[in-house]
Amino acid sequence: MREEEIYAALKAAFPGMKPSVPPADVDPATRAALDAVPGIEAWDDLSPSERERRERVLTDIRRRIVENEARRAVPDADRGRLFMPFAALTGYDGMIADVEDEVGKG
Image (spheres, rainbow, N blue to C red):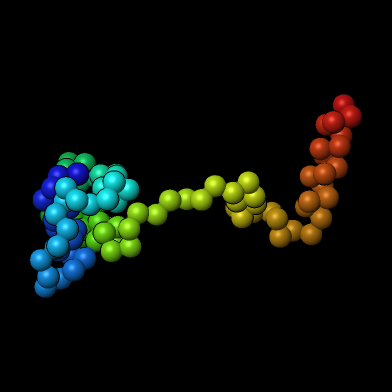
């Protein structure tokens, strides 16, 4: 990420105040998160209104990263269960266990 974009994110995060943290002093995790946000140049053929909208969204993302620091997903062995669409169905776990038993025997 360019230094100007980091300054813009800091200014957006703290309107009316000069950022007290120069871009070089941003912690490594925050800098990595800011670097992961694409610049508007990633999209070539945008209408002026869409370009403006995306610039606002990207600026807001950068502001939130600066305000709230970088976040990392926490690994959890059972995390995938949150996304099982059929977990709420009655008997689904039993059906899966039966299939696993059949495959294990076969």
